[in-house]
Image 1 (cartoon, helix red, strand yellow):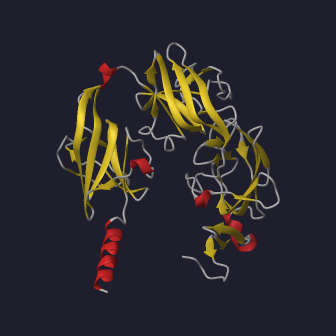
Image 2: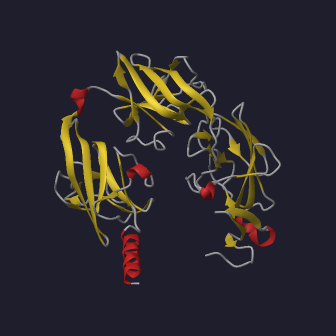
Image 3: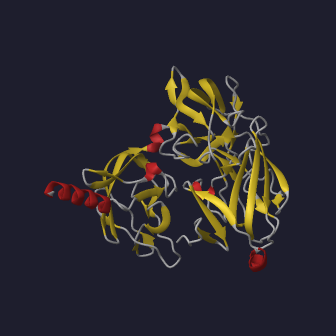
Length: 408
């Protein structure tokens, strides 16, 4: 009995110790507060984060949320930098709800290679220490190029796959090429190449693809994400080559093609910009390639996404605006978020999409009998929805179980 109690006590202690997750976000790891590769992990009882290339600014976030967040403390009017092998007690959020970005102390053009950081947590006091890393002059190395996209830990620059010189040809081996992607330089968004401006062409096997650059051809924005010619497919063990010069040319030279199987999501300003269960469509029984999402409230801008940000559908141009109870065709690749024609928030909305996988088109409609929040007392309807395998009922923005009890 004593042994069993001791085992349970140790197990409960372990659960308590690791009840909170901490993430490093910033210039190098990327500003994703809930990415698995950005999480501190326990190494012999010490919360540790490793990264191949460390530079720029960083922050620490908690449990995959943006708040609370921790960053720099001020030294006069400037943020005090993180120095090598020097414990740094992080500052919390200011009056604006944001922590100050914490700069890494580095000379111009220098970075830390194979850096390791540790995090000590004592209540609300977080102490960050850069314990390992090799300084190097990044400008002396010359530019490097990487593929980053849905297939690299959901657009993680840290996990981006580098092109290496193979017999004089820049070559990248991608275990699973799917979704959308871009080519970046030096694991940074400052220089990037993707879909050629003014086209919606996709990448095809053994067909060189001339890419569009950030700020090219009189534009100021980023090029649209590049996808395969069939965005719902993928290539296992893909091999890509990159020709660097006045024109950036990407070629898919080898790979095993397959049709991917993913869920559909509707992230947006009202529903939250995630691709999780709370934004997931449900297949409609008896209707092929038809999916439904039931929202107690819906409005503002959104996208329709296949997989975890793998393939995005949105407005074809900035003039497109959606209206309630009207059908639209959304094609790929999208030009941006799909914005509404009015600022109304609608109640008890049924959102339906019908997907043509061959043409890469999505038919979209958001339907409701209630015209806005102000009509909720007279026109609201109960909406059924599946969450985590259980049936719930949504009414007046409140969730109930099948017995009518409110779910807190």
